[in-house]
Length: 335
Image (cartoon, rainbow, N blue to C red; front, side):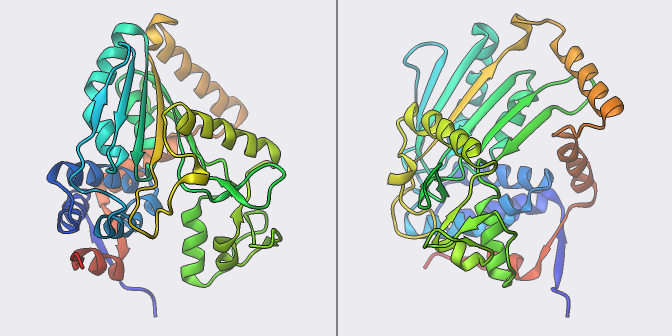
């Protein structure tokens, strides 16, 4: 028998998520911020980081890995730098709190850096850069979390999946948005395979003994593999330096598990925003022409277009999710 499902509009998804987060102990501000990010992930066609990821946040609030009442502390050591101590809360609320000032400062100074630490994992990283691109800015972001990924020459996890994201605005079209992990796959996909009892593809992970595995349960106890071998692992290290080293966040090796215990992972988020008009006044038009040429003449896949199509589709028809997930979220209460 097929799994039973339910269809919701994006507004209903937001109400569902925010209500569950408040019941789990979140402040209204934290619930609104996180619900907004979850809706954005669903709308962008990334359900693994949308409602399917919400139970992780609810459990973390219930167990203390997220301080639901935390208010981010923003400081500016120099005008073009914004530092945020998330105080054990979530990265999304810190970014929301700083967003308007971040955009304003970038338009004044040409570029700014936003660096946060002491938060739960950042969720969909593309959400941060896409919002800045919508304001006409070029943006780059990097984030880390608990160790899940083996480094070059290692068979033990030393980095998180350490994603990086990039976005740039283009004239008369959706922004270019690149959002990818340093690992061959996202951890949530391995966990989903384990829950379904299905194998994972070769080249995704190692077991606890450092042997390649297609068993998702063995992979969870072992380590993910970097994409492209040592080159991907080097990118993970670069992200680690930006997201943990420069922000003052926990190194992935020192970050508590985001799925158990009562301590925040203490993850870091690094965001660079650039106002392109200071370098090239016709940037958005030039980018639009180049992306069109790459796509039309050479068949190049342009990241961000699928995201825009998903947003249009879900904005009109809403989303469909398993009834069991809906019931679990709807009925969530603090223990």
